[in-house]
Image 1 (cartoon, one colour):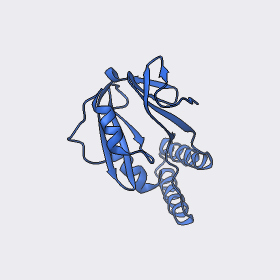
Image 2 (cartoon, helix red, strand yellow; image 1 turned 90 degrees about the vertical axis):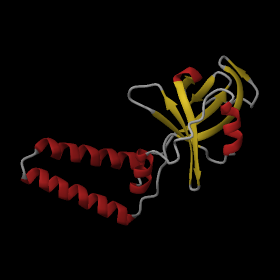
Image 3 (spheres, one colour; image 1 turned 30 degrees about the vertical axis):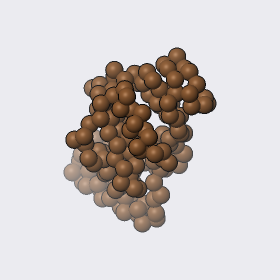
Image 4 (cartoon, helix red, strand yellow; image 1 turned 135 degrees about the vertical axis):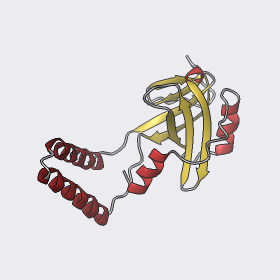
Length: 166
């Protein structure tokens, strides 16, 4: 974990803001949620076996195991640093030239900072603002990267994950 005071210099520039974010949001899942999802998995598994779709049956079992194991694990805490040369999230450095833009969705309980990323597999990098002042973060980022005013809502992926508590 990187522990530096704001203003310290790194090889990527001076630290302008920093906070700790969870690797992923771990939602509270009730017994009702477990029963509904377990029932859905059972129905899909029975359907897959009845239609002799064994690949689908294997996929259902793998996904169920992943969800179960994911539920038992606590998310790691990652250090986020906004620097003069880019951002550091955990052990990964993103120079500003790899980031296309940023936008902030601040409609509590949704408090997200997004970065557009120049990668084929990942187009957006969502970061939870936690207790950060979104206006102060915006002011810092505007010095280095363009703000995308067209993005007004959280990504569909994030909204579905929050809705389904995944």
